[in-house]
Length: 358
Image 1 (cartoon, one colour):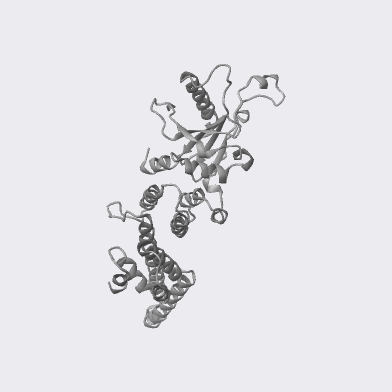
Image 2 (cartoon, rainbow, N blue to C red):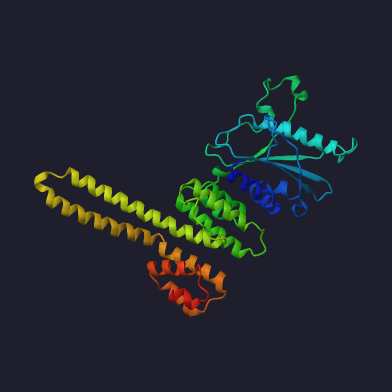
């Protein structure tokens, strides 16, 4: 299990994360009868074909409003490809779970078997299209009399990449933000999701104690994308990591734009005729300058400066509490360079005055 997969597993070992998944991504009629406030994790003993214990599978026992329990079998599918035999795997796991309940004397023969809700949480890039029921993979004619003797099982899949970003943004859900972080359209989308994560925790002070795990997840994702050096010493607070990475990513975008425009200029220079080289070079330089000004204007319109202002205000509010009016006015009227400087000053500033004085 990789570092990323281990963080994934630890996140869904918290009942609040599982409850958020159930309430926001399953049929409400199905979840309405579950009492997620009393759910408890079960220590399962599933093993892979290699004989090693599987750590990507989690079982939660959730009481119902009718006095019974439902066992939620959550499969965390980290593979880049699709397991065509997932329904068969789940059929085996359900049997093993029932056998474990019997072996541990949690069931009597007269009790019957409790229901199981199998869920696959999938974060791969190809959209999930494997069979979701055993009936789909058993080779029998539709009206065969043998159907009544065949095992029956169906599972629910949450394919993270299938949900549009705009749909997820509308949900007041930690799970929705998590899915935006796992399947971002681009690096800007990842940055926006991370900033929304900070806002979510700020507006849900009684939320689950998961900020440390989300900090690890952000760093791991950025390392996988090659956006953060693994040897770099990073802040301990989630808010400061997100703020720092937001600045770094915007700098990367600026560098990329400069390289692209410089490359265009060089191509145009090489294509110029020798007798027109001096005139063409002058024209190219003017075009590059115009392109840079246009790119800078576009980035400004996209809210770069506004984003920096919002992040810095959130960091200062967290550090110093309610801010006086003069601070808000000073920050909202500042230019980009000043905001960058004050953001760095925040790392070791002891008072509001030292943030602005350096």
